[in-house]
Amino acid sequence: MTFSYDVIVVGSGPAGSTAAWQLAKTGIAVAVLEKAALPRYKTCGGGIIGRAFQTLPLDVRHVVAQECHAAQLNVLPTGLSFTTHRPTPIVSMTMRDQFDFALLSAAEAGGATVHQRCALEDISHCGDGVTVMTNLGTMKAKFVIAADGALSTVARKMRMADGRVLIPALEYEVTVPPNQLDGFRGIARFDFGLLPHGYGWVFPKQKHLSVGVLSTVQQGGDLKQAIGRYLHLLGCGSASQVQRHGFVIPVRPRTGPFVDQGVLLVGDAAGFADPVTGEGISFAIRSGLMAAQSLIDGHLEEEPVRQAYTHSLAETVFPELRRARLLAKLLYDLPRLRSWAFSQHGQRLCEVVTDVMAGTRQYRDLSFMPRTVLRLLLPRKWKHSAYEPARHGDGQAG
Ligand SMILES: Cc1cc2nc3c(=O)[nH]c(=O)nc-3n(C[C@H](O)[C@H](O)[C@H](O)COP(=O)(O)OP(=O)(O)OC[C@H]3O[C@@H](n4cnc5c(N)ncnc54)[C@H](O)[C@@H]3O)c2cc1C
Image 1 (cartoon, rainbow, N blue to C red):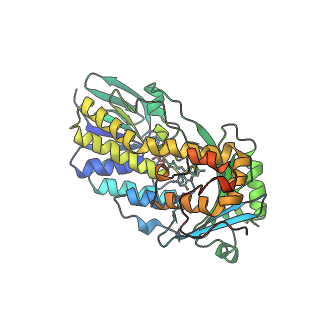
Image 2 (cartoon, rainbow, N blue to C red; image 1 turned 90 degrees about the horizontal axis):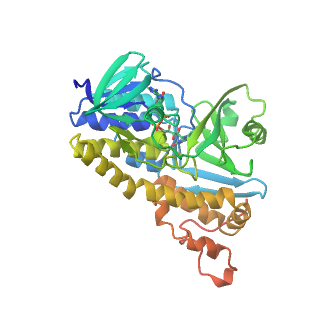
Image 3 (cartoon, helix red, strand yellow; image 1 turned 60 degrees about the vertical axis):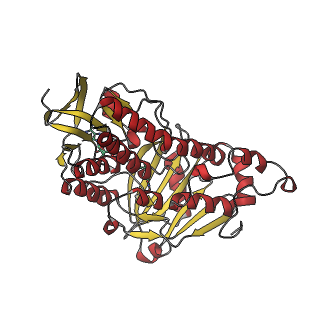
């Protein structure tokens, strides 16, 4: 077989572009196929958490519209409100057209070939490589990285086992007057209680607010009604301009394998979004970089590559997502326990999740699961501390 490239990366979101950048800088012949033309709008809050920036080996701070050093969590029906602060940004606010374009430009500058408006239509594995059919023609490579997002055509065409849980989410881009915008400046806001299993968020951008809701159950009820109520609550019910978007977030990984017939799955195509927050960019970047490193370390040989990537995921991503699923269960599936936990330990819970978002702790370091979740149900005098000691004070109602 004559190869067009060593590796073809399908999709130029954060997973694909970082993988391509890593491969290109090692001298591997890599192409990125992207069905759209960047910069393009992407349905996303555009919140890049500290954990994502820690993983990202590229400097893209120039696309950050606003840095939020504070996060506020409101439990609407109870009136409880908790605010956390960090010296480094908890969430850096971007628009994904700018963020993704910066990453793809870095990959291209590093030596990757970029084919835009190039949609993968079919794919097959034959002998020692992979053939991809696109609207621009056929190409061949030793490996393909499937970074084509939640609806991955690559995974579907290759009949890769699924098992992901895709949850619905809405993102509205809401134009408000400057004085109203000022009220949201520097704070990433999260609201529980808008809908039974889910939450809402407000991410302040340069000239508008990105307002969203997600439901952690697949048939999430009426998300449109929920976001309508949310906009009224925020005082944005009569905003001058509202752009409405919706998509899905995969909050449970595929059953695997994650490397099969010359294809490596990364990011949303693999199902690596955080089940607590729906945040997907940090593990998209991480898995993209790990897939690229596995190809480099495995010298583009199928078995060593398979072993390296499978091992990397088992060591890092899977334990973290497994632990996160337990916390998500507490937050979304056990409303009475959640109310109790917020009323007794709300500030500590927020500090812990903020630490995870900021990248200073991992879910798997948290000592409150699962044994301590049970201790949460015990009377106070029977236990010492349900969570690790809080660093920023105790719970308070606001
Ligand atoms: C409403 C909403 C809000 C969210 N907010 C946040 C947030 O604030 N922070 C956060 O971290 N995460 C957020 N997420 C999750 C985040 O958007 C994803 O987890 C992340 O984009 C996954 O990155 P990726 O690179 O795997 O895939 P994507 O970013 O989805 O990129 C896939 C790329 O592949 C291209 N593609 C698809 N099919 C083909 C094809 N056949 N041929 C060629 N190219 C193709 C697409 O055009 C796209 O550019 C949100 C998700 C939703 C739905």
